Length: 174
Image (cartoon, rainbow, N blue to C red; front, side, top):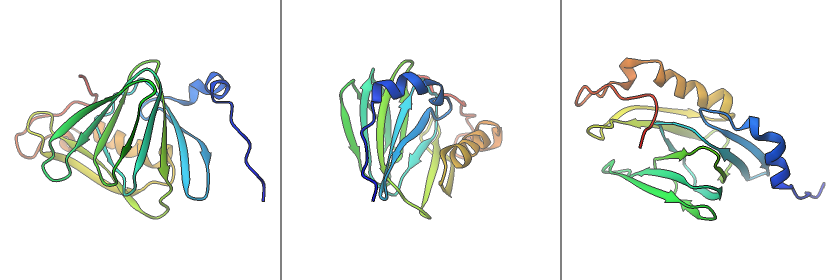
């Protein structure tokens, strides 16, 4: 067995800033048998809500972020700002949209979930109805998540609310 060594996080950030690019701005920096640790930068402008079958732990290292959370039953959206140094443990199956601002850095710890489905969901900005939802197995953020986001962004049909007819935007603005 090879024992782990520590990671100099400030040095890693200095040397890898370009890896934190939109639309997700996310990079896995360490993986174990059960967990993966990701560093996430800003800005991003995602409008999707991620539905993860396991808990997620957020720690805001630099700046502050906005974590938009939707009640799984009512779809009511709550905005929670996580300030620099703050942390939050998100319950499993809570739809959430992490909004990262410019020059911010956070760490997210997730349980690995090989073969488990997760989803991206979009809500109408006018009436909060579900506009689009896609369940999939995510093995790689770049290969699996980005195409789902781009499919939604590039389709007016997918972005049009079936309840009120509103054409939803491709980027989030507070």
